[in-house]
Amino acid sequence: MSRAAEETNRRMLRARDAMDRAYAQPLDVPALARIAHVSQAHFTRTFRATFGETPHRYLQRRRVERAMSLLRETDHSVTDICFEVGFGSPGTFSRTFRGIVGRSPRTYRKEAAATSVPTCFTMTWMRPSA
Image (cartoon, rainbow, N blue to C red; front, side):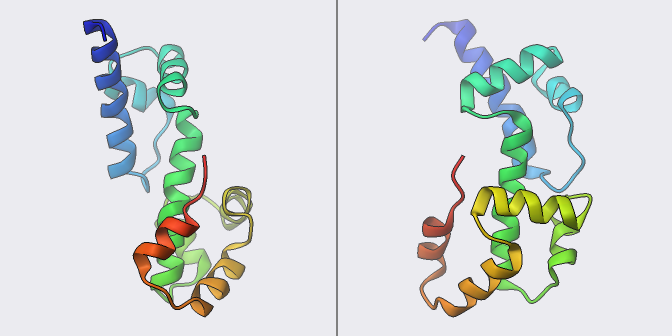
């Protein structure tokens, strides 16, 4: 791997790590591009080439993964979880959750409660795909 490719990968990992840490914060492409020290257009293209999905989709998936965990492990309302993981509205949260997981947050919670298996297995089995 060339030195330039390694540097590009480091920059993209820096931005992805920022998304992992601050998934509930309002992150946008300009802010992430600044973290990676590249232009917005270059950031979006390179992130997708590196990780196989757009920055927006990656952030949505991270938020949904966290919401899945909260739905399984807490009794917070779906609306509270929606805002806690960084979504701006319950409608967007439900639509995105259903698109990634394949069922609504309420249905997911009911099904997860009925399943009494170790959390590590549940997390692996229920992990949303890209």
